[in-house]
Image (tube, rainbow, N blue to C red; front, side, top):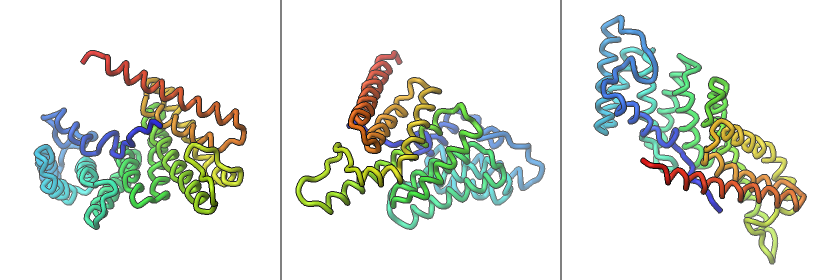
Length: 291
């Protein structure tokens, strides 16, 4: 079965995102980062912008500890300096390793979320902070597995949709989250069933027994439908969105485990298989494009 790699960083990586901001604009200064800032009015604000610009250079040189100190200083000098707080949050997030054990990694993750939340306390519709939280909470929810964090992550992607309903990415992320929860639950149900019976085991591809299917529908029928709707919406906005098609394929397979009719199950599996072929075709055409 074709399974795409889950993009656990903010649209490939929070570190990558920040690096793009920095390297694409070598002239970047404090008021031209994530958003417009008013010119400094006090000596503290002027020093805060100097600290931010120094942090930008440190980050470009991969000196992340120094960059963190610079952004912290900028925040301390001017607590309402949104760019400094966004840079600080993103620098923390870029150092967080999804699933890595250790108190320091956990501390960094929580520090990043708190900084993003701090931005939203000042500017509730700041899309960079909304996206940052959505991505980071998704990272943190995977290991150890925490369904509440996945749901919280989803809530930030829903906020993005409310603010910018024509962006395809948040619809994609809702589909990814819904599939993640439904896929894990499906595997657990099958494993528990196999432990409870003797003889022939229930394979991953086999239909769920009626009692198990009913339990699965009660817990995950609605999220599966939500994920399918969200991914279809993402594709309607971006017709060549192969990542969304890949997860739609996976959700159709989970949808197949919620239906009693064998013909309906076969139709859903065929829809999933057709999407695999479409993804392959898109990738092939993309690979043939001239550089």
